[in-house]
Length: 149
Image 1 (cartoon, one colour):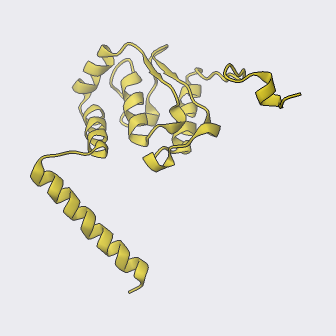
Image 2 (cartoon, rainbow, N blue to C red; image 1 turned 45 degrees about the vertical axis):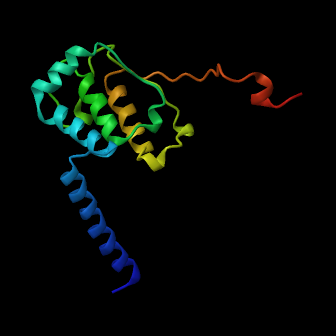
């Protein structure tokens, strides 16, 4: 057995033990909370409907750094009524979902942010004619952008 295969087996055993320990202590980590929240709104339409009514608008800034589970939650909650089985099948309610992001600024890969999720989300929104590209920069002065003259 190669060193890599042995390490992989050890890691699998370690992760199983971590999960058993969390369960015995009755604790959840951040990833567990995201999974449970996503499963709840994805699999229980009455729960999804409740939260869809509760939140009239969803605004997500820095969407390029959104975790795939967070993206699923956002899109499921953006429907006017619970219908879609998968997040990328969602037809967002008109005017409910507003995403802001710049794929060139994605920095949170370590937190499972995935630029492919950004691209998929953009396609979902553009399918319903809701895409807008803003090219104007309000953060930097001309001398910063073009160099001091």
